[in-house]
Length: 156
Image 1 (cartoon, rainbow, N blue to C red):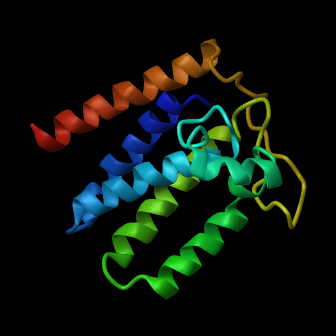
Image 2 (cartoon, one colour; image 1 turned 60 degrees about the vertical axis):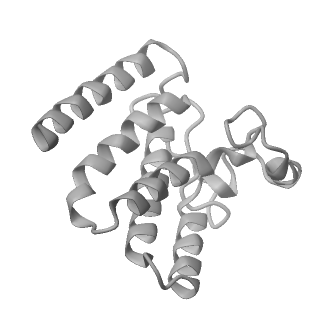
């Protein structure tokens, strides 16, 4: 999926859970960072283009370890151990943003190995959507429409 689709889907997650948090800005920031993070192993992604993430691309294949719930669980455990302030907002934000990114990518032709490296089984739902193709445009448009409706219902 393209970045814009991941953002539209994550905005949906933000809008659904927004009212549960006192520190709303921290929650929103955590979701956005988590949405971008799985693609640091791809040299053409927004974060992957940054020099600091280049070393990951030598050691980790795209849609490998960073595209797994295994990594997300590890990350959540580390956040739980090392963070005290805003723990709930950050952990739940990462679960939403990262989880939705992985689920969205599982609908693409390349699929996702949800529990890599524990298992190499790829998950591809609904036959696979080509990134940037017509079906992805439909998914993007659907989530933008839902996001607009939720914004209107929640804030106006």
